[in-house]
Amino acid sequence: MSSDPMPEPESPVTSEEFRRACGRFATGVAIAAVMDEDGTPHGLTVNSFTSVSLCPPLILICVAHTVRMIEPFRRCKYFGITVLAEDQKALSDRFARPAEDRFESLDWSRGQTGAPVFAGALAIIECALRDRLTAGDHDIFVGEVVSAHWHHGEPLIYFGSQYRVLEPDGLSTRAPSSLSGPEKAAE
Image 1: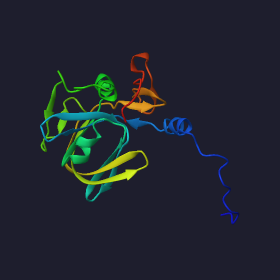
Image 2: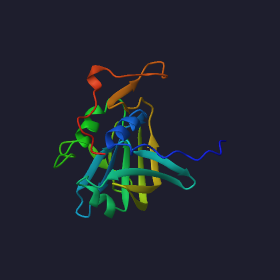
Image 3: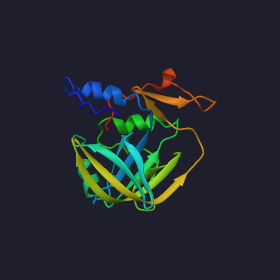
Image 4: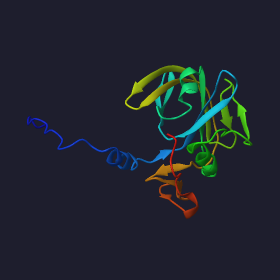
């Protein structure tokens, strides 16, 4: 280890530089969803989803303050995470773009906790909201997992601003022309 002092960065990183650097990290794609007090479902596409702890089982999602439906997430007792399979790109796109009723004419159901979930997913995880933290321009929602179910299949992956799918060898990814990324993700 060097005892030399850390040099100061020349200039702060721009939002675009930061976005592009983070885009080099491959992630899965999920839908986070809640029911509001009136029984109306709200949801959005997220790739800022991660496990936090095994004991107790905790996960987190991050939601931008600019997302119109952030208030139902802030007021919820429970939220659901639907981890999308490679054939659910259309669902990801629908929930990544602004729309009044993203759930209209979709096949969704209420999970064990009442949170909206979707069939055909790789995993459905339902959580009790345990904590909400503000970090920069996002809220971090920490959920304690109260129900988790999974199925075999291949994931929908997001990398370099494009959807990806696993190659048959399971060790590499490809971005077929039919899987371009959403025009603007709703975080």
